[in-house]
Image (tube, rainbow over all chains, first blue to last red; front, top):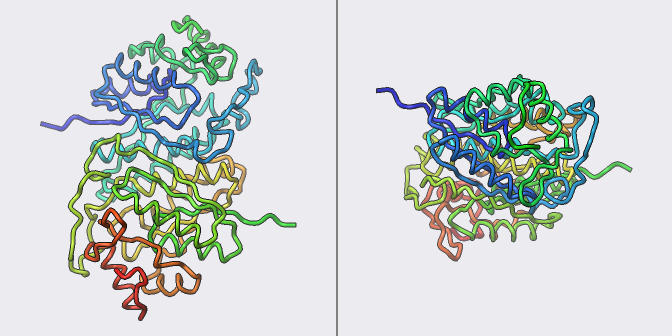
Length: 228
Length: 228
């Protein structure tokens, strides 16, 4: 009997990471959910991640706290004026103020530790290079560099069976993500994409993330069940 | 006036990371000290790191807590029988039980975030490939892979001035590290290398780390002021 393939899915609470996890789950992979609490302003994101993991029927859900707030630096977790109502044409053309230093590197490092502990074969994350090309750590070259870290810096890697880094949404448009998520039963109503939600978890509807999400649903000919 | 070069030094409390930090400090670099608390069993290590940072006159000292214990997995932070009295010939030939999954990847990821927040030009760490060749994440290929992560996954990297990864001890013998540390005024008496110290921070003298340290002082013709 062959062993069931296992993966660690990084969940942010948003629709992209939920869709990525659902795609890998439907390959017959046993998916462990992992959220990293880096001191983000909104605990609503972690709540959304937990609900998504439950609704998708993932194997379990862990939260690892990384106290990046100890570094200081307003860009991490302090009050940053989240840009609102930006022209869609400028989305993704610069490094936005919402960029969190080395965030995906920290997320992937923690996921790599989790994958080694859980003897998982892969890490899956919802990065997307089209809409988020302004973020260095959402680009293909970064993922390839981290694949080399996995291949060289872990026990499994040096044994010749490195932990894979799966980014199934990397080249998809937001409309494609909506359609793929729908096909895989992603509970979009539970997801939260907003950079600046209310304390209760209501999306602002005006930040870059909300605007990209709205455009995705619109172009897919769907309405967003989260209502944002 | 040119800007003073800045670095983030990862300090473990041991003699290697202290020596690496001192070497870079004596280049005229302003060194910020960083310790990562990953739930290690011995708070004595963090105490040692703090004392080392003070004695070396580093710019400041930060601790970032990464709750890897939330992953479970005994290899991380639970009780592991630390091997004692192993033959020196086998040191460094296998992946030891004291290997912590993806530890240096997590450390470097947090240091990369710190370097971006502090606008530091480099990260310095005390990894050594000769005595610790059993640890995948102490090898040159791993450091090169992480350099590519720095170059591709950060704001500074895509701007063409990537944060450097400095490992000045990489190819040194332990005896060379003793001599270099001495030349740079490293307070060896304050450092703690042991994998299994007492609660009060006294080294066991019998684990791999203690034996490598003792051999280094012996081969350098010095006595260890920490007395282990």
